[in-house]
Length: 124
Image 1: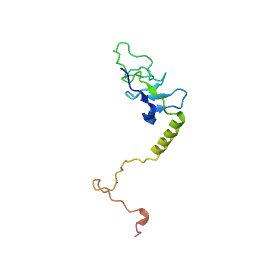
Image 2: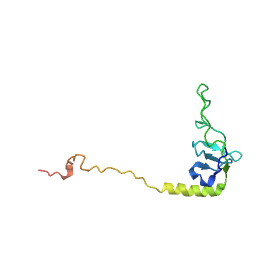
Image 3: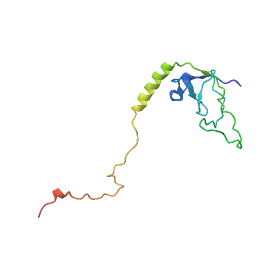
Image 4: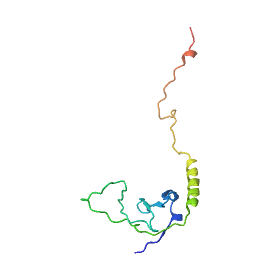
């Protein structure tokens, strides 16, 4: 079965790394980071864990990821990628949070009377 080539320009920028000497990208199916070798994603399994020293030999092996050996077209230069990525980082840094903080003086919370400061008390 022949898979359609994955064009790097259509892949999300945050899932591409063209900064190093070898291009890397996250698999579109399982989001595993892989090095592009010979214009293809290398064969990998959906439970791929590169930091795991050795897999459990007693457990059954999972089938290959559906994007294994998928052709990759590197139609984006590293300089173009880095400039677009820098713009995306800048835009993301300017976003504001949308968390709503509750007003402590709301109707649902009981109103605690605030005592009069000492310096405002009258001397008798």
